[in-house]
Image (cartoon, rainbow, N blue to C red; front, side):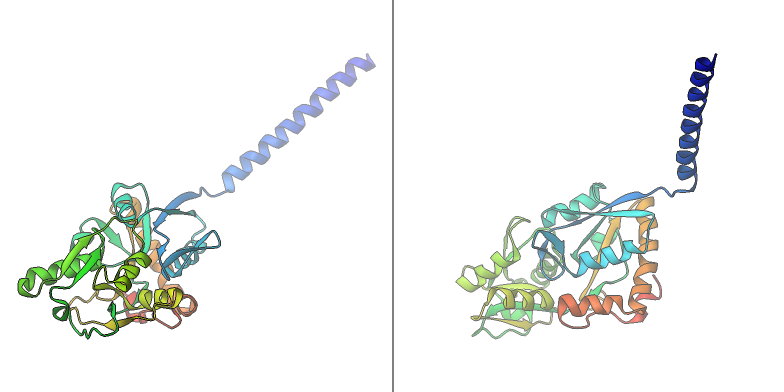
Length: 283
């Protein structure tokens, strides 16, 4: 009888443990928040906006994204590296939820993506041989360069060629995974005459690569676009993208106000290239 009672008590004790365990899991599920994984695409080849260092993907845009999602615990941020053309196409297809890759605004992109508030503001510049004097794109008439199919600088040059066919520059298209540093090396070697890019990136690459025979020249691209020089995150143009845009913009406004963006800009750009507070008021 005692043996029987012992068995019964053991069964009851085990049942109690299972019930308590089940209650613990249930409580966790009831009070815990669902976390959604958000994938950001980047090429890790647009230093100082995005690059790889000691096996870690970093750069201004990437660290801004991390700072933003640190404020959004309902999401888990995952960084994926791919070539630039696939960055944009991947957001277009919904494979990635947004991109962090020094992406500029233009009308065609706005039809396909939601844009964040601006992350930084730079100026257009060209990398050229030291002896070449350049102030506008017209000074580069007949000169050659290498361009990526999906890059905003390619659009700028195409628009110049369309508007000034007698002052057109030669566009040699290269694959999206052809590094910016390689295109600069092509300028240095004389394979091409110039590279149109943003001043921040060019100055960083010049410093890293020791390109003493080249110079960075600010250039007037003759643009009246209010978005000129600004770069953004882009999101998928769907319900999730719209929700992310709203949440991210609120956090960007906060990070601009509390100095986080300025600190990151000084770390990765060597100066404060953060837009003024006005740029975040309507976002």
